[in-house]
Image (spheres, rainbow, N blue to C red):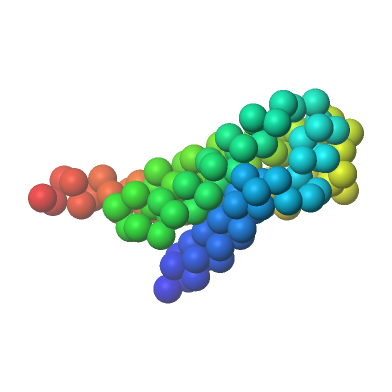
Length: 118
């Protein structure tokens, strides 16, 4: 139950963040420009977040979604640590990354277990 609650929360947050990036909603374009990234990268990150969020919602694909989103959050953490930008600290991206790695580990283990059984 806790796993699904956390999964639903992260799926909602990641989908909202991803779709706002794809739509070019402020402040995302300004942040990416400050970080020195091209506009296409904003859309790529947004599509990755929205897609990963949808993958999280399906048990058989949840580990793929969690893995994809953990990679995106790792990139966000590194960006926030190494570039001047609008974020006060990289803590939020790092916390999301750690939670997504945890979901990935549990879901991957369950997927492997299902594959072995049948």
